[in-house]
Amino acid sequence: MTVPSLMQNHQRKTYVTQLHKVYNEMQQALMQYQTDRNAVNLKEAGLNSKARVEEFFNEYFKIVQTCDGVAAPCFSTSYKNINGDAVSNNTGWGGGNCAVISSGASICMDYPYQYSGSYGYVFIDINGSQGPNILGRDAFYLAVFYDGVLDVAGADINCRTNGVCGTEGGSLKDVRGTAEACKASQSSGAHSCFGQILNDNWEMNY
Image (cartoon, rainbow, N blue to C red; front, top):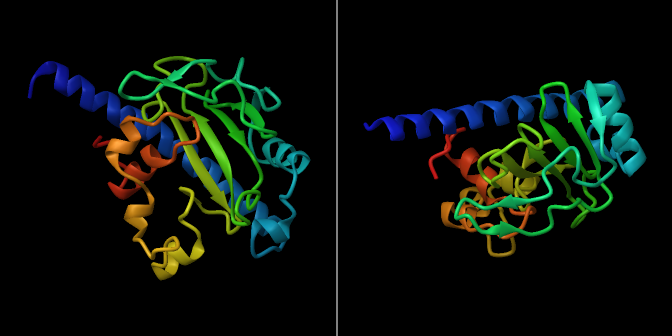
């Protein structure tokens, strides 16, 4: 392999390692939130409003800075996709809570099951406002389901456990999107890059 290829592969592994660390921290916090409240899911645990998400952040993370649903200074105000095109909707994320945690990652989260009755969102930039600010490299969009699992939109409980995915009965792999969709993502709400990493067992092969 050439030196540039080796460097690119190393950088991809670094991005995935950082993402996996934030993912694990978030996943463990969501499960602990349920356990601490003797609840079977996040809905029963009461994670059902912006105020509760703020409490969740403060209770389970070391918060360095909060941003109250807007990008700066937690996130960059400008993101691109892997193809180099501008990504829309990167000045804020609805009514979500946004914060920088002790690892240096920035997280913006809305409460679960807010959308379609089953999920909310988590937008993660693994190194905050630092570059490269590319969706699918250092920035990722995840869905958080009421059972506390982080995946992509469409990968609800039936999809993950029973293989019944979407109205046409697609597979979990299909629901997570394609590498082509990841590279050409036009919105910060695109799930396909994270989906590809899950499909490839925590490898960035796109």
